[in-house]
Figure (cartoon, rainbow, N blue to C red):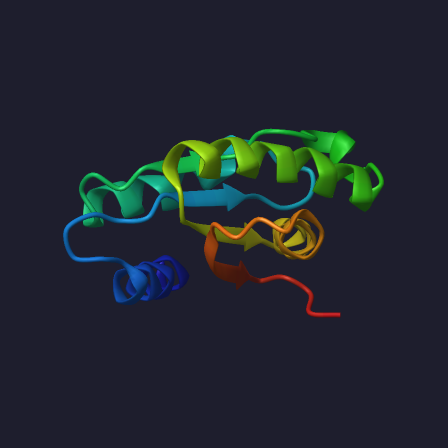
Length: 123
């Protein structure tokens, strides 16, 4: 729970007072988008009106697919959201942090305003 509060504090510091940038979540290995639901619920509760998206691709053992393939798919998903909503905050948890970093580096999407890497390898 402490980690969630820290993340929410970072989101509050980065958000505009009248409206919040959408929060896009990419979860870690061997999971499903539902594992991010508690964080989504906290964000939506503490930041009323904030749109949250937990991206759902490469579930369970498919998360062992080639990382570049995952980056390409998630980059397209993120682009669909930024095309509709503009600037976003992108949060990657565990392997999702590696994928999110790849999305930022490879997709050239100028609407990823803020990147949060949570429990992700750095190298």
